[in-house]
Image (tube, rainbow, N blue to C red):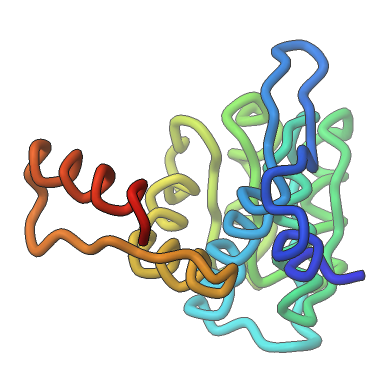
Length: 181
């Protein structure tokens, strides 16, 4: 079954629970995150049949990236963070990845890849981005309100749009909606 279908049928159900922290990511949240990543990949010029590689420690975004690739018809290669930089570079280059995604936790292994992976045209890093990487959080947040609204409407939810943000107006909109949107 496709992630979007599960998210539509059971949006509040936990898709991921991080054992160490207890953080819960719902199917709706995972689907929305995967959708944002898919848009970033598309905007970077990737099309079905293209390839990405990623190297992260165990975290829920690993799944969002994999779902985004699957949703986009992309091949993906998860790379072990226990490899040496030259081994990582070989894998990323050999799989012909156009995008490489890493996290700050693996900076020491990921940072030296730039020269050894000339096919990679977009390098993203979760958490603080190292030199040569763009911020994963910033690029996936671009146009997020629009994408969030569209996603919620796919679930049949009502979207309350503020012409410009005002905290009191936001609360008033929430009260209006809770009494019968």
